[in-house]
Amino acid sequence: MAAWGDGRVTAGHLSAQVKVNRQLPQEDATARELSDEVLRALERNPRFISGTLPRHVYPPLFNRYEAGMSFGGHVDNAIRQIPGTPHRLRTDISATVFLNEPGEYDGGELVIEDTYGTHSVKFAAGDMVLYPSSSVHRVLPVTRGVRTAAFFWIQSMIRDDADRRLLFDLDISIQELTHAGANSDAVTRLTACYHNLLRRWSEL
Image (cartoon, rainbow, N blue to C red; front, top):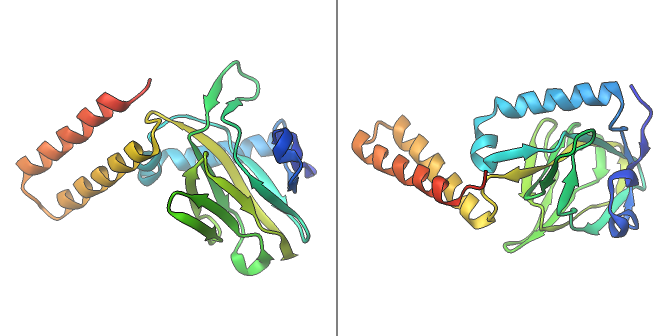
């Protein structure tokens, strides 16, 4: 395993002033292998695909917060260059995958501020939270133990958060109606609405 480096390497100018954590170097072979494993798991997760409608996914990174470390309030950079490629992506959605159990450390909650208020997140190992990259968010100081996580960004085919949420709710409803044995003609019409809205709003 590579040595943990300074987490400010991927922070913007303002974010770097409030970021105190450690991060695996992106170029490290083990980090790339772990990143690919996360991407393969995401590709097999229908809820992730439905919720994000991904066009591009930034290769996951890995961070570590030891006692006394935190990340103050910030907004993620709007554009990210994918390392080793000429490609850039627009950060529509931010993602954090928690990699150790919440009982292993105190503090370290991910706090997200959005139009629906302020939310504090501290999930079990393997759980992921998705939130708009436009949200102001922060990681509270860790006071005991170590918090590790994977984090990355998604450019969605649907730029607007509200449109993306509407499509997600419609898709989930279609799946539930199908499993409940609802009238097939009605489900077909709803499915047509879903795909026609996706056709209208998507950016490829």
